Image (cartoon, rainbow over all chains, first blue to last red):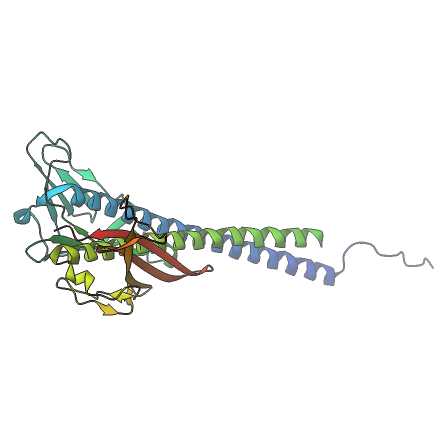
Length: 177
Length: 146
């Protein structure tokens, strides 16, 4: 009678353990990849709203500080989004003052309009303005504008990672010239 | 075993990098908000000065004040206000001393108090994610120029 040869290779238990380990690794890698993508999207959305808001606010503050006066008939301090119109010599001190306007268009982007020039898009396609509240304060001597600007990230779906909102608020005095 | 350890270290590092990036973005965004809130407070204090110098000179020095919501006339109250649900905002006024010869602002002995100039300090404070309490300050000198 021939003795049993020592069996080599994998037993059924080895195979089950191996399969379970591979399955666990695949699940972990998938979940990890998904989490990384979610966090990356969230960071991009947050960055888009605050960079756009900061730039938009900088542009408005710069124009208000340089303006000669508010252009009240063309401004809207009641509606949200509001409209800010200014008369300025910022581009050429020797020329008559020109009208510049900040307004929100139908695509919820902030637009800068300067008399005689093509409108300029201040905020990009990644974000939309959900609120632009403008308030005029005056005491007869001084005049200031309070701006509250809120931007949302444009979200292709309602997923958490694509959502971001950001608000900037400030007030600027009109330096009458 | 070595592969698992290496994989774990890699995963932890990648996660750490992404979370740090998210935290930095968030804190940068907060810092910009704080900057604009400080600018706003300075502009409001300047507005008060333009109205009447006594609006400032009647306030106590080195005491935190806030203006509250709404527009002029502001009625400064002692303490601080909460802005955008995150930030604590206040301003303080400090007396100024000038060199008797050069009239430059000075802190040296022998300088003369200047009641027509105030140093305004706007302070914004908030809790930054993973970085503790952050403080942003702006300083401005206002004079009784009218």
